[in-house]
Amino acid sequence: MPQQNLDFLLVRVCRAHINTASEVFAPLKLQRSWPGVLLQLELKDGMDQTELAQRLEVSTPTMTNLLNRMETAGLVRRCKGCQDSRISNVYLSDAGRLKLDEVKAAIQQMEETTFAGFLTEEKAQMVAFLERIHTNLINK
Image 1 (cartoon, rainbow, N blue to C red):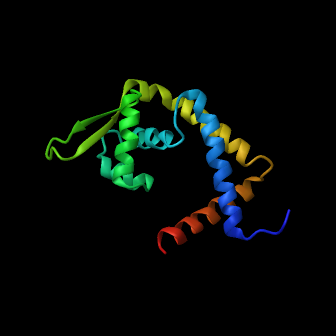
Image 2 (cartoon, rainbow, N blue to C red):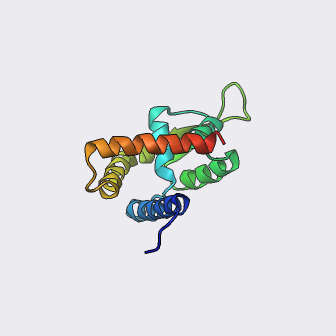
């Protein structure tokens, strides 16, 4: 294989990770972007759509479309805000709550596959590197 630049390699790794996530979450009847929403709502159920979009680093319209699909699938429910009816708060449904254990197991499976053969120290280094890359990209 010819030598590759780091950016191209990072794109290849991201693509492989996205493909793996799609394969892992498909049997759970989840799209690959849904687990992040479920896990964020587990941390703070009832947050508004804008905060949820910010936490997951997606645009508000993207979050709206994502939540529409998740609501149709019965995993979340939205309620108009108490103080401002323009704001929608998002909650896990009972079905969404039940999916959390499966989601966590699937994520564990992905991590084991992704980091097979890595030492604990290497994983820690990888976390530090990825955090730095992320910071560089969002603060460009």
